[in-house]
Image 1: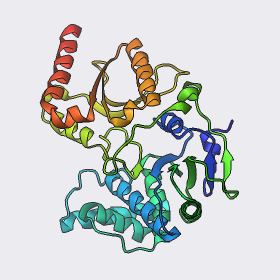
Image 2 (image 1 turned 60 degrees about the vertical axis):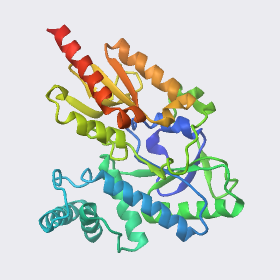
Image 3 (image 1 turned 180 degrees about the vertical axis):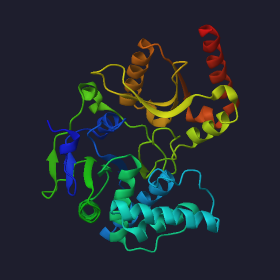
Image 4 (image 1 turned 90 degrees about the vertical axis):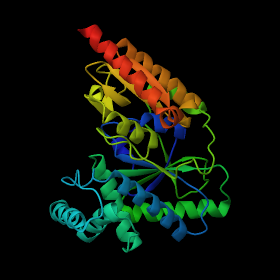
Amino acid sequence: MPSWAELPIGRVVRLDADPDAVALALDPLPDDAPAVVTYFAAEERSVADLAASVLRELDKAAIALFPAWLPGAEGIEGPSGMNVAAVQALARGRASVTGHFGPFLAELARRALTGGPSGLAPEVRAAGLVRVLADSFGRARLAILVRVPDELGTAAREVLVAGCEWLAHRGRAGVWLAGAPLDDDRVRTVPVPLPAAFDGAGEAVPVPATADQAPAVAYPPVAGRPHPGSASERALEAALSSRAWAGGRAWNQTYRPGPLAVPIRVDLLWERERCVVEIDGPDHRAPAKFAADRQRDVLLQLDGYAVLRFSDGQVLTDMDTVVRQIGQFLRNRRRAEG
């Protein structure tokens, strides 16, 4: 069984595993894994259309993750001329010592503040976005996990494979296909280093989502920050930021219950009070993820942590109750500790 570090980069392969099991195994990212961004493929008419779709979604992810990939830009917000000049100078300086393509990085930094489309060629954007996204998670490499839907026709499957080959070659990313079989001799199937804990995840049934709910791209959070793609995490952080009792919190931390245990990523942690807050989206109702959540909760509770779970809907529609319950728990625990 290969390690994550041994899975191919710069080429297209198909993973011999259920995509839901792969997603569980990659959260949090194993130490030896590249950064992994998931792309939910849809039917495209041409390779150019597929490339444009993937690059558009990778671009959105890179903009959302700013300033994780540009050290020194923390706290620079808003489209003022001074801010734009500052981030572009930082981008050019970083490119000069890292090998990033300076014009691409400077343009991306500007657009992170001002918005607007890129004016650079697709080949330049592919290579630049792959490097930026890997940097965001402190990894040297990036893999794009492409989830293949069941309903693709023969022509659409051929477009998908050819487009993925373009992306792997131009971006120097690993492109890992998972999901429906493709029956394509160009794509080699490789084993996946899944922990034993996920052996039974292959029978997971995804929770259906409407077209406006399903993301085109998913990516991990950056430790210490709410996930930029999660409206509920960002809203909860905004609500907590003005409350003195909420100090000491840390977003998206990795916790290891024991030296041989599978690490656990928690959404929100108060370490001193041993309190974990989890915010669950609809995907947490899928059988594999639901079972994994219960297992994680038990491991955390055995180590003395309380786990408070709220749904996305609760956070977004009844914030006062969510904040009140978190605050009540923290105050009670602090009183008990004296």
